[in-house]
Length: 120
Image 1 (tube, helix red, strand yellow):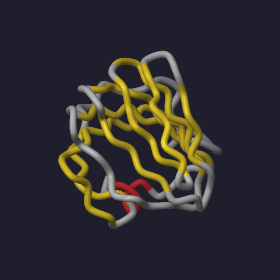
Image 2 (cartoon, rainbow, N blue to C red):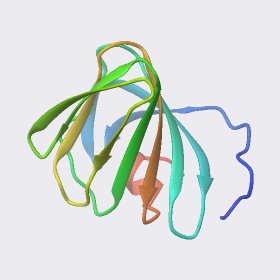
Image 3 (tube, rainbow, N blue to C red):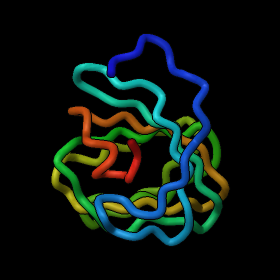
């Protein structure tokens, strides 16, 4: 359902992405969903990482605090607070928190968050 302002929902634990287990728990708070995109707030403790996965939507990751090691299509990138990276559609990628990190992820088109992250 479309919303104009994010609700104060608590972050929810996620332990797999696209059915691929993570090493540790991501805490994901869906912020807004529109007609064409979804915005999530994600918190990861140092050392937590996703397994390599891909999906049919594109993602933009903006780091608010901490730093992430993102591997996108085999290219490793370190993304610090104030920086962003792109994860194209259908390109294998992973993310690892190099320190406790908080970031915003925007996904387009809107994915099925239940299937992608186990969130309803």
